Image 1 (cartoon, rainbow, N blue to C red):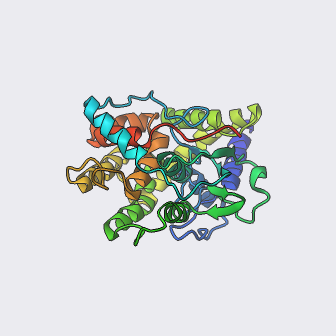
Image 2 (image 1 turned 90 degrees about the vertical axis):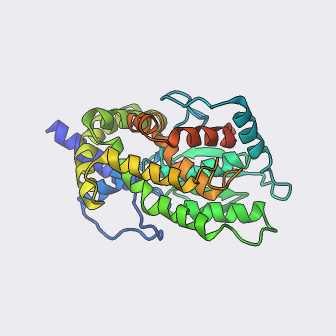
Length: 327
């Protein structure tokens, strides 16, 4: 009885914290507990641009990139120097917000899209980790999903909209936000790439436990909540992941992940980045949603069995260290 209650508790808790949304940002219609489990299973509870995991990016306690989990070495020093220069050129002389606060779940891929953007453009930001059990940290807001970004007191929501708004403020003289090709790949991230992630991170019992250990270690959980979440959540999401496979017509989880990232590598057409010499918003979006899985078994397998490693390493260098500051 205790085991059943534990799974039920974490299922309700995660569903309360991780409300999945459609790609247009509209909450998916369903009040059933099963649907709520699916929300958590997609690591979803971030806003559009979002699925959960929501608990974060592959990072350490203050948001720095985690070099463990088989980070690929750079091919040569010249490449590293070029990529570092690419980041340095992005600083804006016209946009200097005084207070930027990101309300997030540490492993949320959509929160990580926003963080990758902030890091790349060297915009200092503070993090408020939202407790998915009660969301007390965002009770002040009518918007109950993450990411939420406050810029000098002004609320911004939905990761893609946040990035669009910030990009325009950084580049006010830019005639267009991004090209049609760039937009297409940003939509691909939200419509396809994120949907292959959850079936992979919960693919086996051991991978589900690994994932929830990461979530509960980095998330805003009490000790008791962490224990219930890790074991109850891992058990629940292992079974939910099987339904997610069916929902998204996935036969082989790893094959779907490998195919997705190989599709992205093909889109590079031999360039260092989709944006050519510098990353564009499509590069940042793909990198952001992949970063939370990088330290997990699925991420290690992804790098070892596809061609994504060199691009991912260049992106790590281009994005650089986290711009996060302590609150």
